[in-house]
Length: 329
Image (tube, rainbow, N blue to C red; front, top):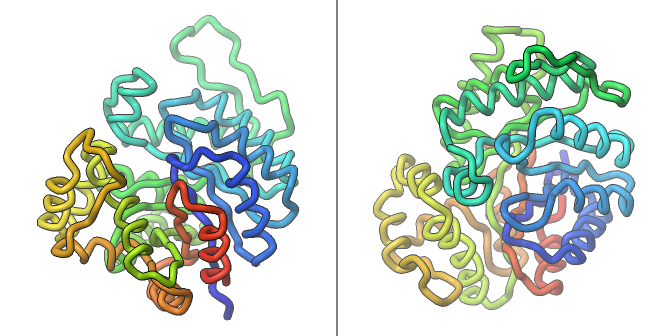
C-alpha cells in the first residue's frame, strides 16, 4: 500500500508564488493533502482560494485557522466558499493557537482556550449544517442562517495536544493535526481519542491522524541539518512558551533548555540546535540526502494515517522541489 503523504507549510512562509507552485507540484507528485498555515502574515483562506483555482485533485487544508481570529460565522462562510471553489476538496482546520499570537496579534485575552475551541468548533459545525447562528450577545436580534447551501459533511480537523483540548478532537473532529508530538506520544493520544470517541458513539468514523516532521533534502548533511535546526529553534525560542512546554513534557526538557539558551530573544542569525540537543532533530525533523529523508519519513508510517512533510520557510525553490520529490508517496 502506498504511503499517504501531505505537505505542510509553516506560517513563516509568506512567498505566495512559491506556495502556489509547491501546491501544484505536490498534486502532480501524488500527495494527498496540501496544508497552508496562518499566523501573522498571509491570509490562508485567500491563498487557498488561489490554489483551488490552479489545482484539481489535491485536498486543501487550512492548517490551522485560529478560533480567536475570526467569528464562527466568518469561519463557516470561508469554509463553504472554499468548498465550492475547490469542488469539495477543502478541509477546515481549527486550533486554539498560542497566547503570544492571540494577545500579541489579535489583541484578545487568551482565556479558556479549550472552551473557546469547543464553542467555535460546535458553532461552525452547526452553521455548516444549515442551523441558525446562536445569538447571545444581542438577544433581540433575529438569528440568521448561512446564505449558501449547507455542507454538513465538510471535514473539520483540529490541532490539539493538551489534556483539555484533546476531548474536543474526539467529540467534534474528523481529523487530528498535532504538531511537535513524538511518534510514541501520537500513538498514545490517538488511542485515547479513539476510546473516548467509541464511548460516545461507536458508529462514528475514526479520526484521521495527520502529523510529521520538518523535512529538507540536501546532499550536504551539515547544510540540511542547519536548515532543520533553524526551523526548530524558531518554534522553541521565538514563538512563546507553548512549544517548549509541550516538548519538555515529553521528556526532552534538557534539550529544549539548551536550544533556548543558544538562541536568546532578538539574537541575530537563523538559529541553532546544539549537538547535545540532537534528540530534538531526530524526533521532529527529517534531513539529509534523498535516501536518508525517505528512511526518516517511513518511521512515521505506523504512528499516523497521513505523514505531513513540513517544508521549512524560506527554502530556495530548487530545494523545495528536491524535498517534495524525495518525500513523495
